[in-house]
Image (cartoon, rainbow, N blue to C red):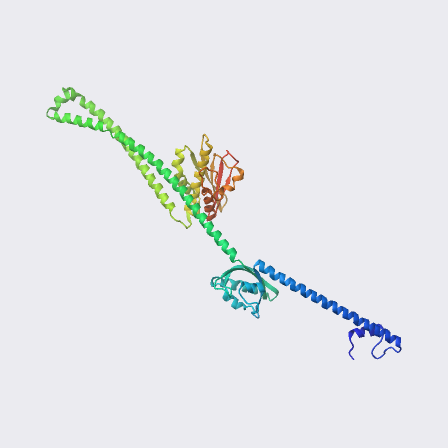
Length: 470
């Protein structure tokens, strides 16, 4: 006979078995009482267990509701995929995010892949297979078309292996998905704004270059006007009239030149007068030739500057190998005449030639802006001896520095980082584009722009760091 475990335990306490029961009534009563109490306690335990299970069930349900609400607020959902069955489990929030009815089963893995944008599909497939086969975790941003929509939305999917691996291969993976469409929209708007700012900064930088070129051409034209004035002065009509008068006298006395040159008072002075006149002509001729040579050089310089400006005005989007000292010389050449006019000396320290891979146009814009900025700082400071020093240093095998140093007004400590901010300027008529655009251009070509100064009235130093190989 099979006995209940509770009855067996009570019989063992009385040293009884089913075949040897108590022989007197009191023993039977005590046995029945104990058995009865045991069943009462068992019912109480069962009640407490059931009560605990009900409470736990309610708590779990409440916790699950809170978890679902948290997923809704965070805009994320949970997913789980079994490789062998191909089945997936999606949280309710993920179903809502991807437009699936909560009462229907989640799509299998292959169906989910078909929802992904064709440009992102291969990435998702590779990452999922790597998670299954290599145990790799992934974090990707992809476009998915929800089942209830005709437009793609952006999602961030994070996932990795779940459970134990068999022969280093996982059968299950799980993770979360976040709807990042709003973030992507903001990022695109920020990128668009950044591009607009960059275009404005580039235009401002090109304006600075063009302004420097126009100043230089204007200064050269002033020299051209001086040369033309000297040419006009040396081209004296009086000398020519005197020569014509002498020739006319000789012509009138051509039949008796011997008497004319030896006996006539006018004729006797003609040789001496002619020699003096020819000497004046020779001096004028020499002066005219010198001014013509200067004028030719000045016109050639104008041509070189305009050609340089034409090359800088183009849109150059490719990297090229350039000699950095030559680039610095070109930037100085653009600014040279205006610096001369303001009596500002500029020197170049370039210990050795260095070829770098960079964007020539952006580099020239940066250097011209830094030199112009140094010039403005000097004019503001109104120092007696205004100097700019440009120096090229090799930092290591990968980077070089171009330093532009002036003894001008200097920069206050609090402004050392602000000066590269968009729209920030300390100049009364400044626009705040120049240094900001230069900093952006430096970043675009893989470099960086920094400033150093001991403070107001102690000059400043701008350091452009560039990669040698772009």
